[in-house]
Length: 273
Ligand code: SF4
Ligand code: SF4
Image 1 (spheres, rainbow, N blue to C red):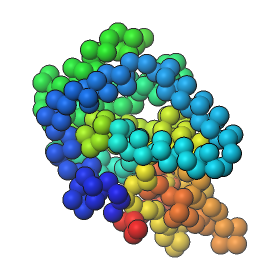
Image 2: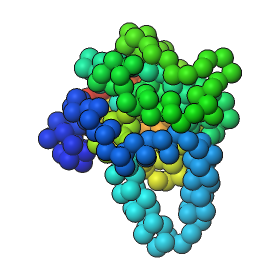
Image 3: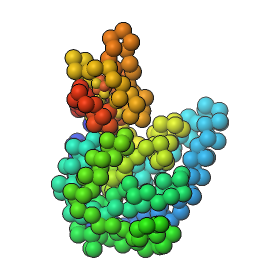
């Protein structure tokens, strides 16, 4: 179990606890302001990633002080964890509304509106305070080239989209907005700021899932499809055996490799920490 499961889930998976999605948490004024500030300025996210390059050029002892401080702050404010699709399905089993919204990371990194993110709520969408807070941010965030505003979608539609994105190699991740409140689930790749920070800039602001992938060697035909989709470089090919091997230390338990394997040779098992 991860630190958050102990702190915010009473020893169970913290993101499966309905109280962490509760509307009443949004009555905290600090949290409401944080959410509006978060969605207001995509450029700010890009600037922060560029600052990480500066930080990574600093002496090791400086990084050793500053990085834990940043991670500690992120854990309090906006922290993510990778989820496999079965846990996404479990979350969708108890939330009451789903709203699709533009991904602020893609706005920052690509300058385009890409709708990969989903806001979750325990109340119907038209009563959701989270939806109201994001809508109040204004037209800059919500006006896209083809679609305007936030889209209320059914849970089935959303899950179908999630499954399709997983086939394309995108990783599901759950996010807090002033921890422990969970505002939504994103579908991430190298265009996402958290992915860049965690994987490319050595600043882990997104934790691996509670699972780890394993290969059943008898089933693996060595096609290497899974290697191509793993965004964490956790899969190696053994020339001697003609099969792949997964390095558990690098595996984030996203399940993207599993979705790509036509031989069904990959499973996820609970991570033992
Ligand atoms: S995709 Fe499946 S069959 Fe192909 S190398 Fe990976 S585990 Fe083996
Ligand atoms: S090995 Fe599979 S489950 Fe692990 S990080 Fe790579 S794609 Fe995700």
